Each structure stands twice: as C-alpha cells, then as structure tokens.
Length: 325
Length: 217
Figure (tube, one colour):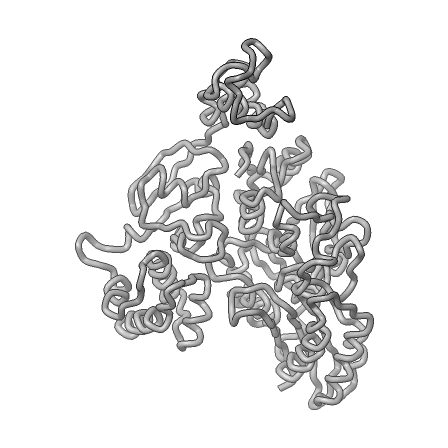
C-alpha cells in the first residue's frame, strides 16, 4: 500500500473539513473496498479520514419509516428485526452480497460508495476511463462478460456491483448527506449516475459530502418479495444479473410492484415501465414474461455478455414467480 | 525511477563521480533512487525526512499512530503505520502467526479473526481502526491445553488437508455457531462461504460444525 496519513474523526463537520483540506484525502468507513483498492494501487490516498468513531450506527424508527445510520454494518441492517419485518427485500439483498465477515465490516454508506468490480478498473496496467479519465475503456473491446447491458456509454460499460443498492432503489430510499454547503437529501435513484462522458464519477456526491443516513419510507412491501442473484458460483461472488422484486397483492391482484436489477448498469437499474405494466394484473407466467420483455427494452449487449439478454428476462420471470408465490 | 532517462540502472557505478544525485556506488544509487521515488509518492513527513538526510530511516519517518488493543485477553500498546493492516500487526509485530495471509484482499477468509466477538477479514481492516477493540485469534480459542470444541471437532472429522485455511475456517465456524446459522447443511454452507478451502475439505468442515452444534444443544 502507498503510505498515507491518518486522521481519526470524532465529528462529521471535522471529518468533512479534513477531507476538503487535501485533494487526495478519502473518508474511511468499513474499508472492505477502499483498502483493497489501495492495495491494488487503484486509489492512492494521501490521507484517510476515519469516520468510524462518528455516531452514525443507529437503526431507528422515524415518523415515516426507518432510518439506517450510514455506519450501520451490512449485517446489523440485514439482521435487524425492523428490517426483517418491514423491509425483507433489503435483508435478502444484503445477505446475497459478499461474505459474513465482509458484511460484518461493510457499512450502509460504504456499500453505496463501492466502486465497480470491472477488471480493467482494477488492473492499473489497463486503460480505464473511470480510474484514469481519458485513457480509454479496456472493457469495450475486451473481456466484457460481467458488463452493462443498460445505460452504458462508449467511455465506460462497467456495472455497479452492490446488491444492497438494488433493494434500496426498489424501496425508494432517500439518502441524507452533509457537506461543506450544509445538508441535503438525494433520492436513492438519483444517487448513482450513468457513466456518460464522466465515468470517473460513480455518484452525484460533491467533494467533501458525507453520507449520514439512509431513510426508508413506511413499510409497503413486507410480504411478497424476492431477491434472485445469478452468479458464477452459488455464493460469495458478484452478480452476473440480479433481480429485486416486491409485489403488493390484494387477493389475486397485483396492486403495486417494485422491480430493479443489479449487474446490468452503472447504477442500480429500476424497471419503472415493467412495474406500471404489472399493476392491476393477475400473477402468472404470461404476465411476468410480458413484464420482463418490457423491462428489457433498450438493452444492448457486447461481445461476451450476450447471454445477459436471455438471462435477465428469465431472472425477472423467476423473481416475480417467487415473489408472488 | 531515474531522473536520467535512458541510463542503465544496473550500472550506476560507471557514472562519473559528482554528476548529480545519482553518482556514487550501486548501493547509494539504489538507496537514493528508492528515496527519490519515495519522495514522489510520499506525504510531507517523508519529504521532511529526506531534507534532513535520513535516507535509512525513510520507512520510520511516516507518522506512526498509537493503538491500544487487546489480543486474546492481553492488552497491547503498539505504534503502527496507518497502512498496517490488523493482519500484519498480528503476524509481524505481535507474532500471532496462527492467523494466515491468503489472498490479502478479502476473498479467501484465511485471515478471519473476531473483533469484539464478531468475525471479520483482518486483511481489510487497518490496525489503527481497531483502537480499544478486543481481538480473538486462533491462539485465543483453547483453554490452556484443552482445545476449543471446534478445534477438537475439526481434528475428529479431518476438516482439513494442507491446513492453511484452517485457522480462518475455525474462527468463522465458532462465530457461525454463535450467530445461530447452523439450521441446515445449506445454511452452514452459505454462511461459511467466506472461507475458501483449496483442498476441498468442505463436507468434513460441515460435519465438524454440525457436531459442535449438536453437542451444544
């Protein structure tokens, strides 16, 4: 690892100031991604500002829903009684990611900040516009099996690797951030961005802004949910394709639906059109296949990830069947 | 590396004396060139060290941080570079070499230890972030000569071949039982998936865990 200085922060304002002071200072939370990136030479910080002592670990009921502190660990969230009860989709998605050891370290905010797992991003000998803007995209004509089928640009076809994010975007979470200009809220769907001409920017945070908490709205999908993750091995691998499905049912009718995909885009990919289609329908293979077809509109594959064009709609069908069962 | 592109770094001793920084013996060259590259990437403390002509001490010049932590019931006050991982602190400074370095990237689980009773990958945890924490390593499981039941079970069921992943497997397995994730073979496999065994001792590891669980209930 490149040598760096270390600051232990006891207050958010101080941590933000510390990061703003130096161009290559980074916040450090669970470290499961950042330390790895530093070891690989992908990130070369001059200073790490340790925010772990900040009082942001709480998981608390609010007037409208549930607030997850940015430093609550993935396991604390996934195993929390209020999450299991009101937001089982989130629990399923988190437990589909990483390993128990990593989930004990990784935090809500850190998981949101997780960088892509694109091999060209990790390999400093390769071109990558996300790591080194202007150097080109190694994946575009390279081994792009894991890569995007939605929303990519000629500059970057990487995907967001998080499972938690897929559930968060489906559940309409809201992100609370604090920065040099004060506090603001960002709808989860607007937190991550598409690569466009600036793949080096994964999200819409401004420099020095710190994630404080994520708010979940009142529990609306506590029963008919499924998180299906398809990967190269049964567990402990990143998604080729994942699907978060949540249905609200009145008897045998779908009154509301949430659908999002992971492993297919630079951000967690919400499927609004398919959701709208499902409302008022009766669960069944034909309905779900049509929803999947709608969801796949605009998909574009590259040389090695053509299989995702078949895998993704099948995964949507299966997730909806499981959720409605 | 070199400030003089095109020169062969293998033959620096042929440089005429007194021609700038890179003159002198091969030994000096290596010292100086590594110092130069260190400066290029280094924070202020190192640049200061160089100004003060402390080339031998560059490695010590980085700001070290005091860390107080407890390992297997014993308190330690140590000084570490911020980039030192908990794994390296345990193995290299405190000599708890039972904890293994496998991938060093959080992908294999060989480095699993308990921090405040919770299993984590020590290779991805900076030592400095463990201030005030209680660490348990494989050396801390046995009670004197009496092995932990999980250690006994791994021996009985032959839950290993080469043994490199074993301390991580056992630390994970002890935590798994405590977490109550032993309801089925499938659940054990899923929640042990953070520990890779290249020898493929998985089915025996599961048997060892199931026995400990049965004996406890």
